[in-house]
Image (cartoon, rainbow, N blue to C red; front, side):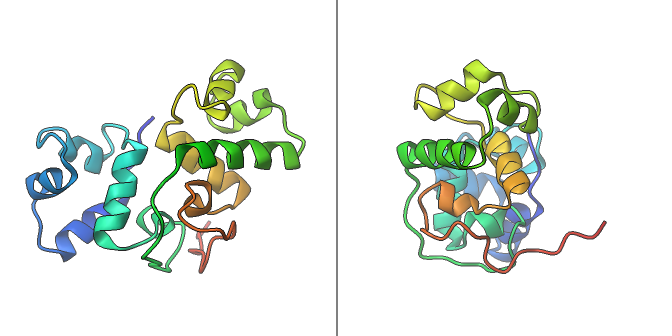
Amino acid sequence: MAIKFKRICDLRIDHDLLQREVADILGANKNTYPHWESGLYEFPIEIIDKLSQYYNVSVDYLTGLSNDKGGNLRGYDNKILQKRLRGIREKNNFSQEKIGLIMNGVSQMMLSCYENVVARIPFSSLYIFTKNFEISIDYLMRKCNNPEIVNKCVVKK
């Protein structure tokens, strides 16, 4: 399940860039990038990291979790992400099966693969996890050391 993040499109437009130009900057296929931006395809976590670095904003800002642009954050580290993901699950005494249900039906076996760095977690699953636990994506990705979302966006119900 891919998610459309409005700010990614807004930042591209604010920087007067075309989708094909952003694709070139990211080293991505010019026909694939529009599908990521529209939410038709899943953004790879590495591409989200590159966008964050290019626009000099936090991933929390890119995804609309925060109004704080952040910026100048470290690069993404998959092994740290997996350790922090497991640590949060264990701290909350949740089974892999329960976390999988929170992440829209991810199987226990797949979650085990994510936690043991056998497979990369899809960005949409990571986003859902962070929203449920109100934890910073940048923290999970090792881009910062603060687990709290700085200057959270207020979600209107």
